[in-house]
Image (cartoon, rainbow, N blue to C red; front, side, top):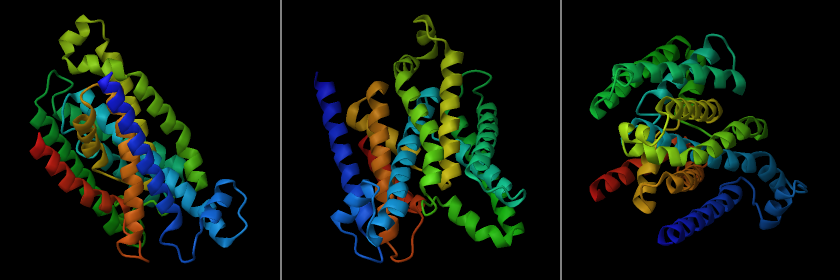
Length: 329
């Protein structure tokens, strides 16, 4: 009963934070004044003023995209840490982000495909290849792996992919600025077509994550114990891995590479609610969405009227927060 009450209170708290940050995102740091009436008109999709049009066409899809991407990256981090049983695992640490980013950079520069669909498939392939290499080097495919070995393999693969991405930027100087801004994680290009493309796959993945959460609790007690309780390890790992890859690929294809959410948020969620994945996954989604939306608002404030990449803001928030959690533990 206590756990359920705490879970409900935390959910309500982070929903309220998300609503407050949504209002800030829609109203603040605009070249013209945006009133509450403008927001009301925009939410009813009947804009009658310039402010309402800005909210409807630019601010609203960007805010929803920020929240959805943050929630998805946070849940991807939870799934990756549960699957590998490694608290340092995240898409950015284990090379998935870097591999996906390299593939998207190749597709958009060398082959000049710049649609969300082409970026998604490139990110899927690049992230999958990078992760498979990390799993191989980390010894996961040959048996139980050491945590440090897996993380070191991820760092090595990430460094290689980022070096190749920088090489592409040097060879394609005309597109280097766009690639650099995209690698930093920017929501400036988020619009309704982008949101319509990413919403369904991300919502499906989030729903599947909630459905498999009891299985992740079994996985946490050890593979041998989980098998003795009837858990199919190969099935749950394949399903979990596919969910992670789809979520990361969709997010990267839409807004670029945003790190730290997948590493920080799962630890914060466990600190707040405990180790039950039935609670961790929803709380992580709410925290991740709130964090990314907050970072998007701050990215417009830090150097106004110039925008700072949201990924840089998240790193500035995430690093000291993660150090604090480590010390508390």
